[in-house]
Image 1: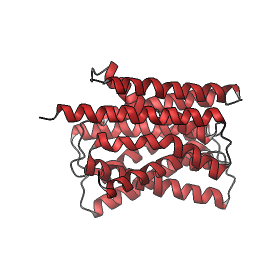
Image 2 (image 1 turned 120 degrees about the vertical axis):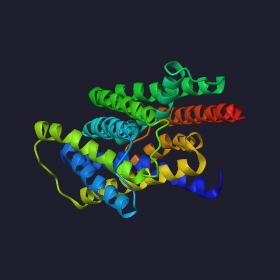
Image 3 (image 1 turned 90 degrees about the vertical axis):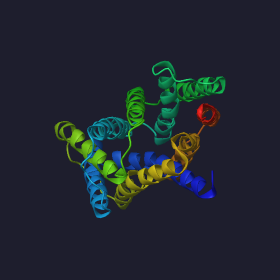
Image 4 (image 1 turned 90 degrees about the horizontal axis):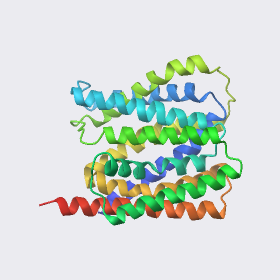
Amino acid sequence: MDLRAAGMGLAFAVMWSSAFSAGRIISTAAPPLTALSIRFFIAGAIGVALARALGQSWRLTPAQWRATVVFGVCQNALYLGLYWVAFQTLEASLAAIIASTMPLLVALAGWLVLGERLAPLGVAGLLAGFAGVALIMGARVQGGADPFGVTLCVIGVLALAVATLTMRGVSSGGNFLMVVGLQMVVGAVALLPFALALEEIAVDWSWRLGLAYLYTILVPGLAATLVWFLLVHRIGAVKAATFHFLNPFLGVAIAAALLGERLGPLDLVGVTVIAFGILAVQLSKQRTVARARP
């Protein structure tokens, strides 16, 4: 892995992890589903317009359309929709920790459901990662964390894992920015009926809300996704996924810095265990892929 790829991976991890704090700022000041649907419409329109300007086509293959719709519903509508609702009562740091289990869930599903080989190092990583999550969640719930918000986040990360598995083996055909934009439009359309039916428009306007909203559109929404696709193209999906081990650390650190969320000793221990669990799983995958090559 070269220095440029390492920088791209670190940038992606920071952008991905910062989305939780920005999302909490927005969701505590505005109706979350409405705000998220509008965000996806804006980001999707920008993505599609840029893709067309670059000569990319929206004439996707049936497989690409299926993946676009499933990913748009599972990641953008379900995962982020549930998380933004949970942000009303749940700290961003705990939400980030739950979301960081996505690589563990994908590896577990690949092993148990799809029959993929997982080396002992990977199995140990899974056990360690989930043990770290259980440690933190147990301490947080006992400390007063909202069980309903935790449940929404668990359902959300399961939807994200499904979306990730769906995208396996599906090529963008060179239309990666178009696919990203269309996924966001799908998410916006899927969220809109629920936003109209369940929410009233009441916004606590502030410069903090405006900056957070603009940030989520441009950085986690568009820039992070673009960097991820470029990183995968440069070093491959398995190596790129290794950077997910940074997300637990960065998620709680950014929430502490921006929102003043308190971190206890058990949080630090749990985050460390989760990070090394994710790293072990990804390194195990790298070794499996390397051995499978002729």
